[in-house]
Image (tube, rainbow, N blue to C red; front, side):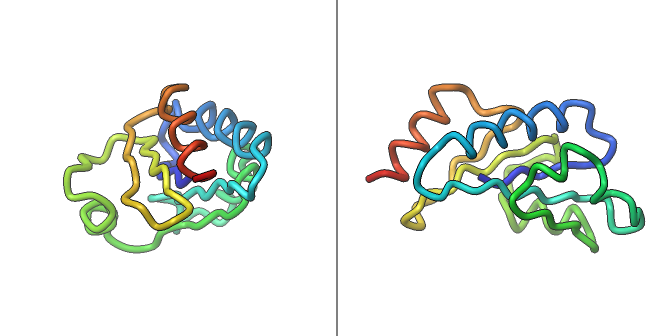
Length: 113
């Protein structure tokens, strides 16, 4: 699971906390990666409690529009933006906001297949 976040996003902390709990409860090595789109100029961004829940935290430095386009050309910049990645390299499912329970269940089933 990859969450694209921004420091100004009011919904991101709760979504990251929730998805962190979900990945930790799943057997099979599910991981939560968080990409902060706008934190390159803030040396304290990694200290935020919700970012510390990520298995891997990346702070993007560069043109966030270029990153959004390379991740998914249809993404219009709404955060949190979640990519549910399959274990087998299948095409990701992209979700604006928190994925539904049905999407998370389908993601978990696909990872087991």
